[in-house]
Length: 118
Image 1 (cartoon, rainbow, N blue to C red):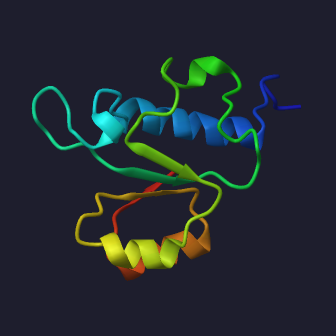
Image 2 (spheres, rainbow, N blue to C red):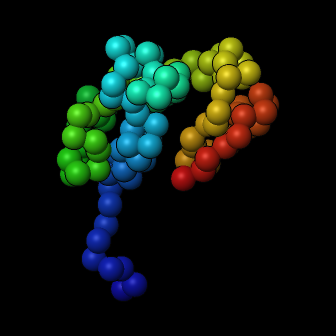
């Protein structure tokens, strides 16, 4: 049937992306996530819109995420006012992670934000 027998749910795919973002951009050392790292660099503020599901931040499997959970510099919300947020932070925005949907794609491009499509 062309399947390897390994099927991920949409939730697991989203959580794998969250986990990768947490592992790569997370800062578990800063007080309230904004004090920086041991080299004195400022922490990166990460804002995630994770949807309304109550278990969106309960990793399945747990190995997808750092053992410390959601890093202090990562703020997770059921939804964010994306257009207003992008416009407000455009000069400091490093990039926008998206699933490639038309809205986020166009809204990010409208403020000149680099995109990471996964």
